[in-house]
Length: 186
Image (spheres, rainbow, N blue to C red):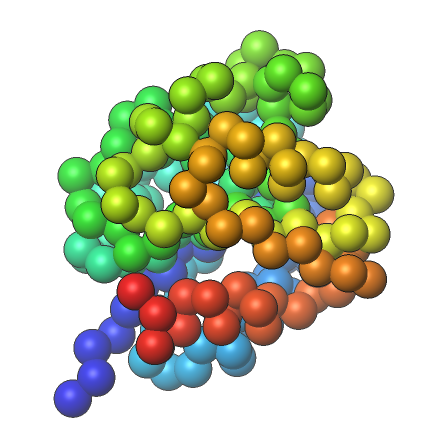
């Protein structure tokens, strides 16, 4: 009997993102992973104006409801806030992986922003031994592809996946993400 793995997907920010944009990413992920995965997709508060305080609280609540061995993933600013929240207060549950998708890097070399600024020792603050994947489309006009390199420096243990021809929504195709976290992966 195969055990179901939980995936928590945190949406990006912007008016209508949950229902009109990132739902397509979640559908692609569900198709790629199959029935042995349960993809959870909570609506973040005030999606059109993300705040670290509100979103990190919602993320911590959603992570606390997961079982050991779950994967957490975040798209765009949802990924930025997710990784910041995990670094600030690591979860009690063991995570199988952390996945950032087209996440803007907020801090030195990236976007300015005191509220979301990532700590310089980001990688050291994340749960020890948890694989980290950074996916970024090379045609992303929202969060520059160079932000993937900034994450690689801040999280030395991260595996960076640079995807040619892909935009900020990765052309609504998360097949590479599904492959990286699928049934044969940790």
